[in-house]
Image 1 (cartoon, helix red, strand yellow):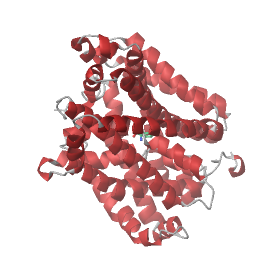
Image 2: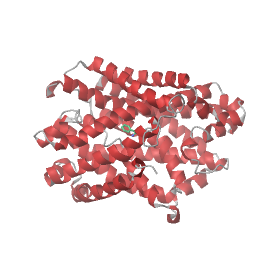
Image 3: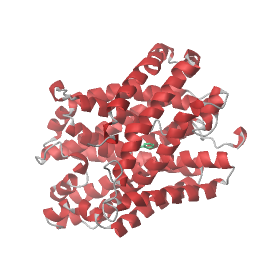
Image 4: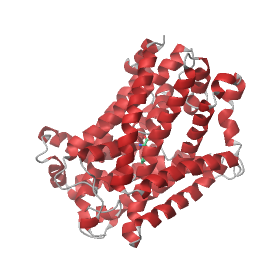
Length: 451
Ligand code: PHE
């Protein structure tokens, strides 16, 4: 595709909302609260904020820059910026593969959320006995037909939006969904203010107790800063490639990171308020929103509406993320194979759905199939989050900081009003990101050699 007929955002607002829509997702509303709960609260939150600022944002800016200058898909952009065919396509290629794999299993989780939205609408949390509510998730895991059905609906929604294109699909829908989800979250926050556990939740999240912080928590925070900002998967390169030459990258990058962080903290506050108000353990882990919260919804005043809006909120955040991931692969395939965009969208969506079937089946018919001791779902998750994402992010920072060098950082900063940030960005991208990400990469590889 020639540069002149590549898609473009309608303006900065459209871009920021679409990119923030990608960033805000299950990582904010599901994962951030449960890992914070498991890592003792406040101190982990502080470390997480530091990781966003010192690791996540610099890589985010690097990717937007590569996309904006390269004016091409997530793989080709690196090559165009480097001006030769080279090794430096690797971070883009790793990002592309991760995008495809993440899309395959993220849409499976999207299906679970639709299941819980459906149960909320039928008021099942309010009417079924506790034991049945607790086992809803495991019942779903044992029912491949139901899982596949819901997964296919979620994928159809994703494909349907991306079929509309960048402006009329992704931008239009995120402009609708993002304000909607902010409103829902504000509504839930206001409701939380009236529950007895609000003060305790705020204390848990904002009063650091460093004795509870572990080495694993630290590593988790670095890794999560990538996932939550949608970096190292090609999204920000692809989205950056639809920007215009004079767009202000630091302003946009900071806006995305701030929206992502504020929404994660708000979701944490809402969820922990419910947890403390009803005397539940904070460290229940991944089942927090699928077992613990439904139990609470059954007991809360107005729980029916809270449950319906809460799962609607999560479904919309997941959808604004999956559309961005699909776009990465679609942009790559249309440009590389010179294929029509609509057909490519259908094929890629179907292919990701087909690979996702392995995840649907990994808790039932294929639960006996293990790769390095993990079922398909866990394997795809581990492979991307512990290997491909950190590796891609590491290589991107080395590429920008050392291969392109300070000139690239100057170009990111020049005439943006953020000149004072230049030195910090340079140090982060050349030193802090490579060192911290190399550590998590090495420390996080033990799963490849199961005992
Ligand atoms: N950032 C999203 C979240 O927090 C996940 C995501 C990862 C989206 C990679 C796009 C690409 O849930």
